[in-house]
Image (cartoon, rainbow, N blue to C red; front, top):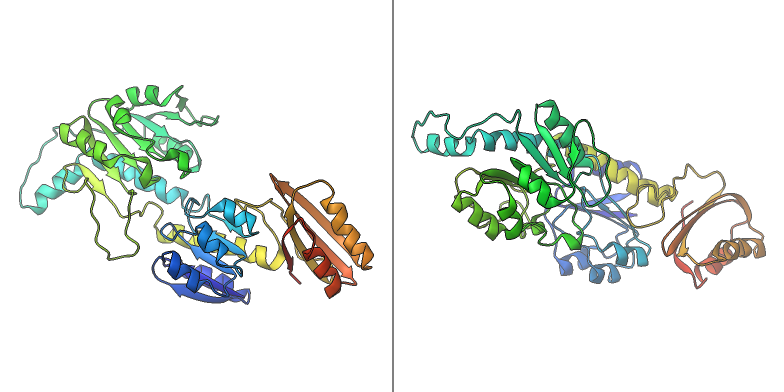
Length: 398
């Protein structure tokens, strides 16, 4: 079995795959569609971060691919529906870099509120400008968190511990932590927050989510942070707000268009504006986070291809399984229609296959059954299961 790992994944991922007997090829940068199609010839496992796009075209051109891991929180770089239709399991790391992003957000809030980017620029230019004008503590100020998921909710707790008043808005119903207050609308949050920070997901519906109307609704002089997705913010509208003084400062870590690899040139309308922090998509890029992500995602992938476990898959029915109890394990991903499980077991019975254990999970239009076989598995039985019209993907794991 072969794995292709792109975009400088942590060495712990390679270690995990190698220990599982999987051959690994590492590639430093991202790949475009044509490069990826060529590279995936004969590859069963793909690991990527945020730059490489696993599109429907790539998926349809890669028949050997059985699993993909997004070594990041987001999965919008993967066509999850197309992957599911082909029986390709997708996994991500929903928690591993949460703390890293939160710490960076806190550091940027303090830096902007104290106007550190402005002072640093002047010092590097040889100008001494000791002044308290425009500098504030974050204690007592109101933080508005847009998106109260894993990152937003943890930031809420840390910010409150620093003495901030926390308000948040999320389109889904979320439990407020500590003394945080849920706001009835985004507009209500923007009217009160001294600092607005975005932590929304990468679903296509969030394209252009924060634009001129939202910036104009913010308190005059409020600060703005985006450490979530680049395409959700209108950067031209943000620049206008910064230049007019309506927005007091900004910290941006993600951009609508980002270079493919380290060292590539980069341009944004937000360059060379006072009190603006620009970083190259490094919110989750600490050594601790990348190590944890490398271990977490590679473990999920190994558990899937070796044991059939789809636990925490983002596109297939979730089934947590242990080591096989029989001589063989059959993993059968199928269309979720009535009678499929009975049909699977009828095939086993007709071929005199003795079942040792069986687990089933369903998710939307798909079902997933893992069967441990005590004895009697034949090539004919496997062929009959694969020939079922409901079969999406069949794997003999042991």
